[in-house]
Image 1 (tube, helix red, strand yellow):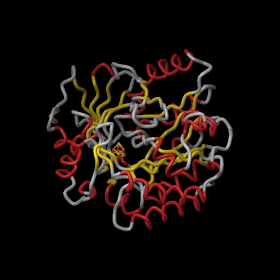
Image 2: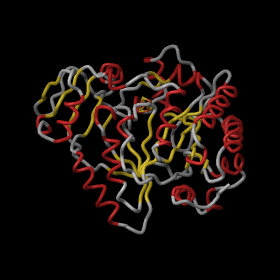
Image 3: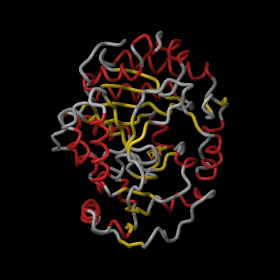
Image 4: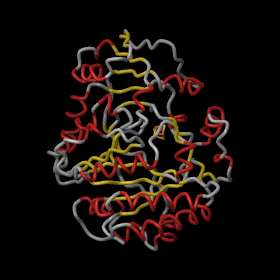
Length: 374
Ligand code: SF4
């Protein structure tokens, strides 16, 4: 089984983080990896700026432990033009040890360093204050807009820390998304059902060819089944859905194996999102992955400035996948679109989120034991 943390060749520690408890815990787990302390913010070796993506492959092998100087929590940057689920994101670091051809981070960031914020106490204080400020509101919180989420969990142990913290919060759930199967740290956590373990899924061909250093389909599903046995609720994200030869067969196979491996009753939600990307990503991906060709289909510029498949093309793929999911999913599971218009919802699912109280309410109902929405 692939452990993304195994690819880290060196750990750099900002001098003001040397004595933090989380730094000590990581260094204990990473006993064989060389460590270097750095002064100020002088990062040796890798360049930043416009052409930083040439350094990305190297950056993924160097882990920087430093403080987050800003806020940890922020709203997911959905756009007004598409239906957004109003998710809150915990910013736990930057970059990712895995390497997906379509990864948006390649075009978003200007720094190749794999970074983990070790001032975890500050994170928990901020999160506690945020949840206490509006106790009547219900929040869904996830990890990482700019980062790898759970890929380094074997080193960081953050998943267990967050799950234990969330167990005592009554107005929120935490979703830990990953493409890894390294979930051992979550085995004995008293999570009280407030952590949802989530995996991105794709057709087996895309997972194998376009998602480097990630777990295979079987490994992800086996990890999900273990988490289900430990009482975690589950979620799955078919995102990005990519047009490729044999896509029907591929997505059907993944869905078949998903429901043959994990209990449908423990899946709270499943999202679908077709490939969308900033125009600059196409050239970066072509430079880094010359054998990948899916960026060379026909696309249209969306209202959010991202390229997407033409609407009839998206609808065709969504309808096919949605029908397969709906046939197998529990009636309690919320199947939804990430960043799509009401027109697409109507055409594929036959309703708009507003008819069911809005997407945030639909998702909230599924985790609070709620109401059928289909
Ligand atoms: S797992 Fe996510 S963050 Fe990591 S490379 Fe793939 S798409 Fe990017």
